[in-house]
Length: 480
Image (cartoon, rainbow, N blue to C red; front, side, top):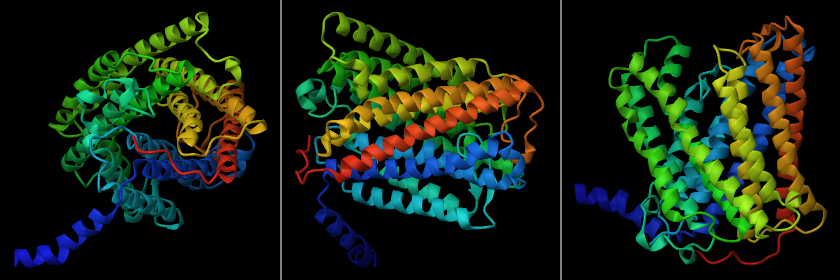
């Protein structure tokens, strides 16, 4: 019986997968296109969020669920799909002793199906928005199923032989696309992502099902959600190294140094799933992940900022940097990303209670990740044979990271200022209590910054679309 089942179910699938030629650059291009497409959708829903918060206009919105549904979709597209699809697009370019993994095509199909389900769930009237931290959800099987499918697609893509270090990949000649010093960061992101999925599962197992909806999702997502921030930062640091390598035209940091730093960054997190042992309502669970967030990210990031600034200063003094740095999107993206990250650290240290200082902090932090990904996209376009054309479009590409970063910084500052004067978070439309000139001013700056950031995001998408339309029919570069 078992032999018959194997012939009927298993062998046809294996035969199909054996016929699939896994091309890492083709897979990378698909994932990058998915990430950019979801960023476009996220930008559309961000307009709803800005209007739902804007003074005067917000008073005209009588149904808070209108903005809250938009918030759920916006956050999940901007914080989950955009970032992890992009991470997959980078990760499949990491050198491997084998030509990738037969599960790569399946992973992409699962992810596409998951995103489709997420977007479709917006139109389900019974999908109740739950604004849980880190991963807000619509409480409906279609939405939850979409999240799980996307997670399965990412897992199929990053959990393969590329996650393991190889002794023959520690020199620059072993990697034709990325500086080798960026590879430990991508592997670190993949390992922490695996730990986060284990934590999500263990949290789900120990969380009672009879809890109120908001409490249930908050407890289940809390631990793994914290770990996802470590994944995001590891990916961002890898992109910083790639951008620095493009500016210096060499492997900018020792592979050994980055491997040690990312090892220090990753190792403490191996114990994270154990924090669920007493249940998700226990103090150990909340205290442990809060301390991970407080002390686990900024030390290593600060060291990398110091190393990169030192490399840039020395490069400038030694004339190793290209001329016209302010006209270089790699420089603008790198510096803007570092500044937004520092602003995020400062705002995070200023959090006192549940007010809009919290979203101000994570909008600065996520803005730093996003602008780094935007800048490295221009490099990836070259890798995939779709370079940004010279002339006006390339000049706009140099301005775009600065425009987006400025808008995101003003947005975070305005939101933080309003929060420092008592504006509650997760309140929209007529729910907002704009009871002081400070809150009104903070929301005004938030609106201006949000619109500037939206313009920077739209400009990024326009540049990518124009470059794609002008692409030459040249073959992809050979696989690394």
